[in-house]
Image (cartoon, rainbow, N blue to C red; front, side):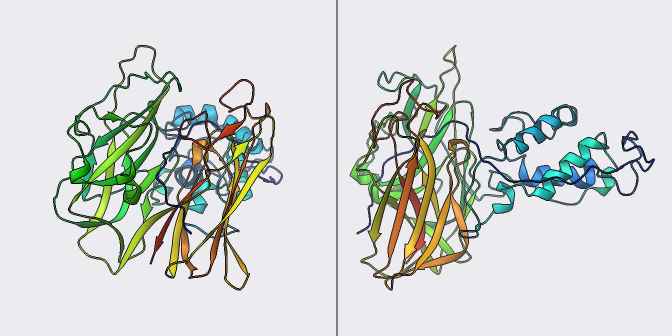
Amino acid sequence: MWTILLLLLACDTDGENNRNTNSEDNQDFDGDGDGDGDDNNQPSSNSVTYYEDIQPMLAQNCTRCHVAGGLGVGDFTDLELLTSFAPSMLASIDAGRMPPPAADPGCNEYVGADALTISAAERDLLADWIDADMPMGDPADAPDIEPVSGELSDPDIVMMMPAPYTPTFEDTINPGNEYRCFVLDKPTDEAFYITSMAPVIDNSALVHHSVLFTMRKNAVTDQMRDPNGVNCIGGMGPNAIKGIIGAWAPGMLPVEFPSNAGLLIEANREVILQMHYYAAPDDGTQSDQSGYAFKTTDDVDTRVMMMPFADYDFVIPAGDDNYTITRSLDNNFDDAKILGTFPHMHVLGSRFDAKRINADGTETCLVTGEYDFDNQMTYMFNEPVSLNNGDKVEISCTWNNSTSNPDRYFDEPQDTRFGERTNEEMCYFFTLLTL
């Protein structure tokens, strides 16, 4: 039967993704036959330019992270920085460091896949621009393209933490980490449905991840309503298990449900935000006041649910660089449709896989890919996947618990079990579905 358990997230570190991109021979961009492309202000008609070619590519593939205050190194909208940084960008692509790993759209096509991968043609476009001495071109040639962003545009409800909070980082078991829960300022006492959502991250230097859930009003204590929140490393108890709404980690795009579908926020429930703070600044004075943005409606035709598919009974042996667990979860309930899923592990995670196994034994790939803490995503499928009574969901998580993993928590690998803290591990697929 379904594993429904609210256990919370942790996420941090870099990842690598080897991508096979092949460039063609360099071209003569300035038309003078010498191949040096030295006319930066007046490129020839066949020249790649920043405004016409590179700017839209960056908006699609890079600037959701590489902007001022973003998750990535450098602001790629700063032309002076970009032109000095471009050769390093190309080297990172060729070395497989960028873009970071993401689910394979060949398994199951999902929204935003184009923004998470770089094709060989796009790689070659950047190389050609660099070889041509990075001509700017005419700003009038810039196509009208909406940059890919982790922010939700035009929300109608924004719920924020009641006040700025300065983490104290007093957890001696997990130094440099703090889990804090806040009751958000809910602007209405009426029930409503969420149709789209994304976090509003105030201080990205402190925020490790967030989890959003609801609790019944009569279960929310005065202590929890304190503007400074309450320590919640152990979660918020059984009252929160049925109330999970969503989870966010660095790199994630806004979640949007299909037309006329929404996730219900009942009138008698409060919205709780759990923040995982990390990397305490030396002076201990940085604060954060994050929240969540929503698009909402009063009524929908189809109700969305969050179903955490999980395994938490495992031990990852110290030194094992390719340890995998696989679990099957039976659908003994009603027919459903899977809209998308958010695979989640901690710093040892290296790969995730999930598939539907039909009652007749045939299989459908749901999501598969290399895992990266800094690029965790909720993969919303282009087409919902049916999950009927009698079907199964099979989940698989793979970890690297050896010294070859540079992001491991301990200097020397240790046997690692399930848990919330960064030095523990998880195997979760936070799955959105409709019944």
